[in-house]
Length: 385
Image (tube, rainbow, N blue to C red; front, top):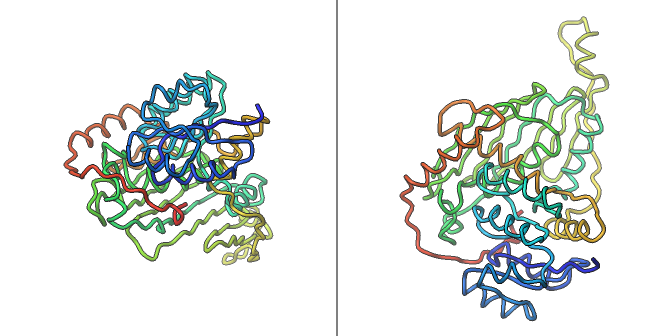
């Protein structure tokens, strides 16, 4: 295959951005052939700005189109696994916007089908193309940091005003979105958490605040404590209601500490590993000699276009995926566990009891009192990640 013909589902805030760079030929070897949207206003937009692209209102007709090789899904979260499964059944490759889904039970079924079909399946984890986090991953994977002991991430610069939540009727409801900051903004950080470090969480205790800062019913502030298989611990703090926000990542290991903040990567490098120093040192007070090093980070963040190009290249040339779709369940598991821990007011052990989480989510949907007008306003996503 020399040219991948792409069908895009959803031309709202994020989908319209994908549509434009595809339509303008910014992805080598790809061509936007069709779009599908249930909203007439969005279909009208597509007809106006995506000249030559077929516009569909009927889902079955869209999937039956032989002029499409691959599907890019940019719809509200609950639909991601269902649409991906339908694409796989029609032998279409899939690139899915984050999150992989709302609950791991549906995502696991999606992963199993994708693997049985042998099609290319990727997630839109564009933060994996950020040179800062690529360098952290390299330093961890190469052993430069030594065994990880602790990981802290304060990610509170996901500021969202009430107007953001009011822009679409599906946002910030249990029925429409299935969560708040954890399911919408933080899938990137929860993905990076395990991708950079290979840390495997074993249990989580979280405290989610629901509608604390905004008139919404889902979580908009979270503080969580995480324990990992190797004994490392972690703290994860996030909110959409704080300004100015902070984005600070600390990863402490046996050979020093990495700090990522303000687009800089600092490495406090120990001349001798802490574990070795502890065995040798007999002076009581004292600590290993430490050098503060500014780590050079080269390259530019390729973002959404980089993930899309990689997806196309994987189809055409067999290039390895930056963000394999089956890995979407990893960050979602952490997100589900944080919500469940709050709901039951207790620790949650992993592997996650998927049925337990699903039942609690259904209870939240049944108890929902959210009343929102049917709205669908397209937002400018240039300021988002």
